[in-house]
View 1 (cartoon, rainbow, N blue to C red):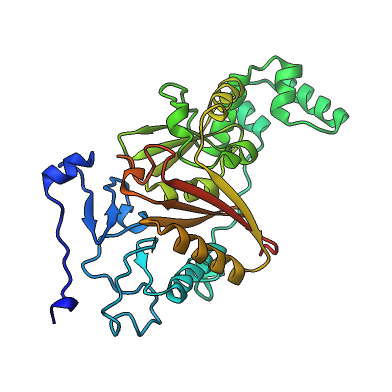
View 2 (cartoon, one colour):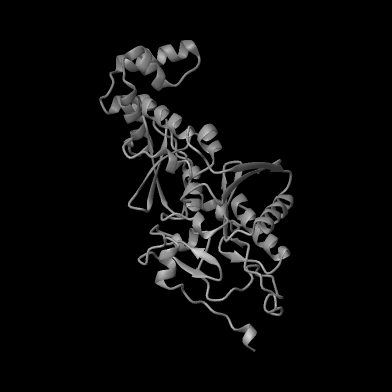
Length: 335
């Protein structure tokens, strides 16, 4: 029965070169699904696409995909999985949504959660390092108490003659992270890493990519581990977080906000079932060759890659804003 025969043959080097893909790349082609090469630690797991030797339905409860061999359905692809029908695709999406909501966590895993660790106050950190005196700290604390507002770092600068660079250094010690240099910042490229909303409202600031596998993500006064993890999962790159001092942070932020971002749509739903159905509708309409869903705080971030040229040479980041779309969803009831 030749119509059941499945082929998984790489495109020859000359064809790959004509598409702008170097022969040394780890990228390959399978059933119209482009799998970009990535040097990140768990690229095969985090990449929106995977190389599969046969195209079976991604819904584990599906019993029909191999009983209907006449179906010629190669897209849409969601997180490397293919659904033989809209119903199966929606089931795969719903499971991914449950994963991002935390509903798939094993029973009893709550006991394995890392307990919250209280950080040493910034003033004590700087005092222990010898960067400020007890008099400077007392002066700043008294001013903060009388005002009833403001961060201690701001009062140290205003009342005790401490520089903003010293405050950033103290914060980096408090959070056990580096102070990142501004060198190599490319706003136009970094604007493609995430939706504009994350820069405007959440304070994320992608700085640069090093060695084609590490994305440096900057913050102003504190780290956001969950945001860094979401960006890591979406980009296929290892994310290293650090701080920037106030002047460098604001300067880089304004340059980044002046760049062109990927088209982003925002939608809201009251329940997970409606959201799963909506995502399936979007994917069926756009027929992407790759898509992925991650949660960043209250936002469910869906990114779709529509054509092979949408992928750049680094992780799963796009080379341009063309043929890539971001959609941010929120649920009316948050757990």
